[in-house]
Length: 281
Image (tube, rainbow, N blue to C red; front, side):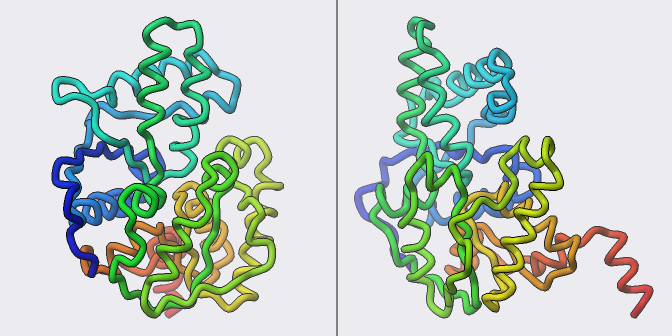
């Protein structure tokens, strides 16, 4: 297990969970906290945090998105304790929204523009924070499984975070990462894209799931819960025997910081399907 890092005792970070993690993957956000605290980082959770506004922004509701962004800046600007050293998020897409779009949203808004730039500059995706800021790669985790890694579009194309999650996963004892066809392609979620073009979105997810199944993987890992939610939903619909985990959750379990949860495929099954299975059995 990774040892506590010396010299970070004064480092304060704020956790920005994001809506998907808050509602559907709370264990992954908890895993971030446990890993960072294990490494000696002080983690705070500003309770006033809400949505980053990405769905509104992408749908053309720029004023509504700006109101949410203004609230984000107010919540994470530090308050009486001063600003945290970093704002860490397990969501690549939410991180990209804040880092890449907030500064431009407040051009011409006086002092608020400067505050937005300052806050945005401190937001870091979780795996990038571990590797690039803390210099941690091998956390001493062990997780035997045959897995694929799904790189989300926002994490790779906007944040350019490509190697950190892979480096962390390659260091996990017993974890076999396998290649699969079309690994670089979008899963089909795309936030509101899945709502506006559901048939195309589902077809993109199915193509990726077919490739993952053909590669013989049993576990799908990602650094973006929105992609996991989309793929998990399609896998449940098709009753594919796949498990889905966020990088943080896998690392925390592998380090012994969290008890294993129910298999993801079982958790993802709709209640009606579980009841149907019991009736058939």
